[in-house]
Picture 1 (cartoon, one colour):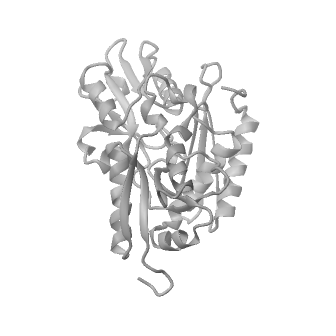
Picture 2 (tube, rainbow, N blue to C red):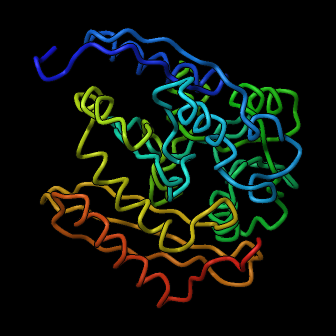
Length: 318
């Protein structure tokens, strides 16, 4: 540990799902290796409790982080570890994203006991997903295959619950984030990993973000060794698109950035109409990016191109 960083006693606020606990334990081990003393504070969030309605109907992704932020605010915890795709685009006043860690596989995964892919689904099959983004991308892919018979149904619950519902036969296949399956040692459940060109990931998918109170510069310094700047630049560009489009669970929006062989950052975005009245819109752009400001500028350009193509934010109140 450097002279500039003292050993800290750090409490991590975390959801109690198996994946959230894995993520918190992962950060705990890294911080302990740096000499800090770390404990976990497990919490059940509103997003974990409301399982009978889609996130877009009950308040969006913020339901997974609000209780954790309250624990930071009142001093019960020092940091919160989040799946970055679950973190609202704008944090409440007084909070800051102190660290973005190296990204795990950002892609979507096809999980099915019997079907190797979309084209292998039986007549009138049911595919489960929790995301409007995946819904519009699946609908476009199924439409291209002439498979209007396939139903896409909501799928809520933590990772183990979703897999159990699949195994019970409620769905022929489900689509999940590959990162969560791999982190929990469930990679063998994946039948197919969708390349971004097949199913464009959500902003921040596969990356972990660590939230702190904005005034805790000691924690920002302690977390600095965990920062993976190439990932942070990628997800900053992606999250800018979501923020500029009013991104929430009620918006079928995908945004994914990756480094090209020439060193430029390429950002792809896709917008779908949840009512299916407009075709899927896709745009991309690229730029030399070395700072968060440059990443955000790329995100703004892609947003402008999406809007010019006809994408729009959902009506207020949806």
